[in-house]
Image 1 (spheres, rainbow, N blue to C red):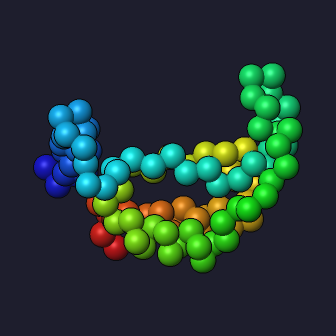
Image 2: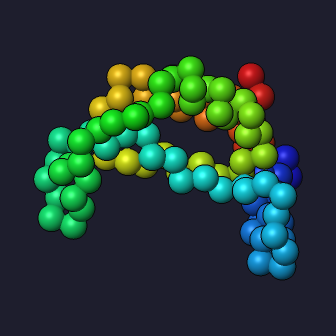
Length: 103
């Protein structure tokens, strides 16, 4: 039952968002980078010049201040091209502990 708790919270917020305006978003699509080493025909992100990307400390601060997020989608160009990608993932998990198993 404990493992299902995050799913219940997500389902509850999804239903609630369809009935009223929430005080805080529960889902975030976060663009980490425009860097991409692919040239997909369906996507032109590789044509964009990367600029103004958040530093790791800024990402950590953001997620510490947004503990109500239940769903975070990390996207962009190719996110694994960021050398600090594992640390970014850790910042997301630390800042959004709802579904994270306890250490």
